[in-house]
View 1 (cartoon, one colour):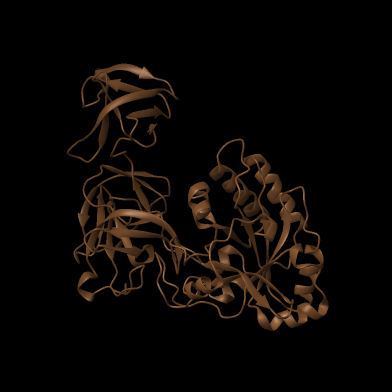
View 2 (cartoon, rainbow, N blue to C red; view 1 turned 30 degrees about the vertical axis):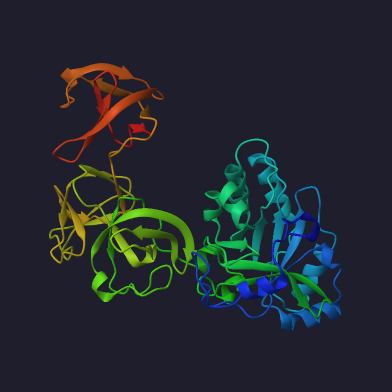
Length: 448
């Protein structure tokens, strides 16, 4: 992010100013409400700040993001001085690590050094990942390793920074684990999700007597207080279930009022079931995902739906303790529960109100909310048309899979080629091997 270590600038100041207008949608996210005070990032290139400079800076910024190190081997000359002055004069600040790690192992070391060197008054920590130095393993694995190490060291919020094209090319999966996305794009508003937008490198601050990089906070995603309160990630925000997959069924809530692009959801389109056509990572409001609903031709936030298992799946693996009810409205508890981790056989039925689904088991009814359970069988094949055994399994020459029809056993770790996956009337599934035999499709027995 420093002047000597940044991607090339591509826009004149006039164009930057135009692109920074608040309330205009340029791409996938509308800048509906943004911070007005500066949010500069500062490094040794701005020099060793004085008490007078920082005292005057306080009234010009919402918060500051200060560089602590340029990889593990180089500590910013003035990080200790400058951050101590921010703390002294009551300026909220975060710290960032300009990444130079070469592997997942060195990313962990870099994160550890960064945390140990940091001023513990920092409200959050950021990874500045804008150049690819990774020579061993993948960039996504290295970024994830940095995140995992920092998560083990601190409960404070972790922020991912990069310019848009680099972020999507080299860290598109790993960056979604972070608490917020800080995206640089000097040409136009980022078209990927962001909570902080670095839009210029030439914002003049009279307190410093020079220009710095500047960012705008998208306050509809995270208000300024989110950045400055210093709360841990667990206390700062609770997100809705955000692990939906394409093909799953969701019920659009009555209170769902806006699509992701902030256009209005018609009342007539609410309180109905839809099938997810696509999903994307996003951090907005209480959601970590956006879901594309083909019937509506729009993306909705994960917080605005509840997902249910629909159709027959045979068995389910529980992700939570769930109450058992004697009625499908789930109003009369039997006093019994299925424990987290239990595999339950059951039939999916629609609730009397038509707005949700239940699973009827031999003990009663339980919710079919997919946030609390998963179908126990794989229901599709991967592109390689292979599966790998997770434990010893048998192959059968009959789909009934009785002991008498066993023809071969496969030890744990065996890779098998498959031609199809089939469904029984009960909802359970099985794979057809290339030799014509059959094996189970249970999650606990095989993986794909």
